[in-house]
Image (cartoon, rainbow, N blue to C red; front, side, top):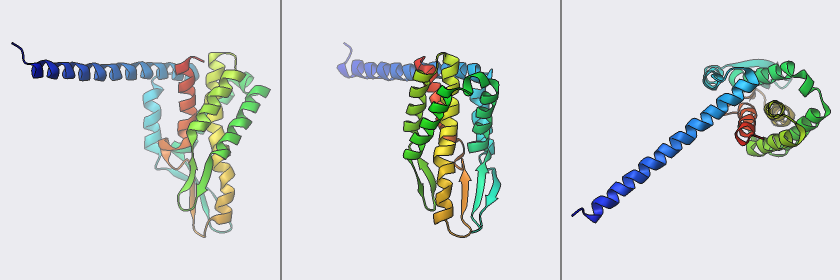
Length: 213
């Protein structure tokens, strides 16, 4: 006779294997969906590998852009800021008929306002952003103000990226000048691929694609 403990152990093992298989399959579907989003936006789904690699490799590069009269140095991080801004600029150039519309400008202004409202500057740390709220705003506005999936993806990525860049980083530069001390340093996108400038646009576009809005 088979012992109860043996049956119970086998059931637990089967349950664990099923859960792991389900998680792996869900992850696979999510990756496929994200590749489709990148294919629609930039013409190449394999950017799902190339973009993080490029971001990681360039996250340590900070380009000096300005030094204030108080000797406060302002930098732009290549991986965390310059790369997502370049991608957004490409979308703006490639889809000018979508971008230069009242709907897009309204969406951008609202996302900037939301980003400003949920961000704050911490002395010695930098700008912190509750980017989840910015992502939610970008996705919601893309749903209501854009007609097609492509337009919604472009709206979500561009407004998410520029919304955080302007509403959080650029606006808070005034605090660097007001509260910073001599010799202080400030890097826009300094957290690299973990920075809100990088994360917000991609997260908003992926969420739009996942929900099929």
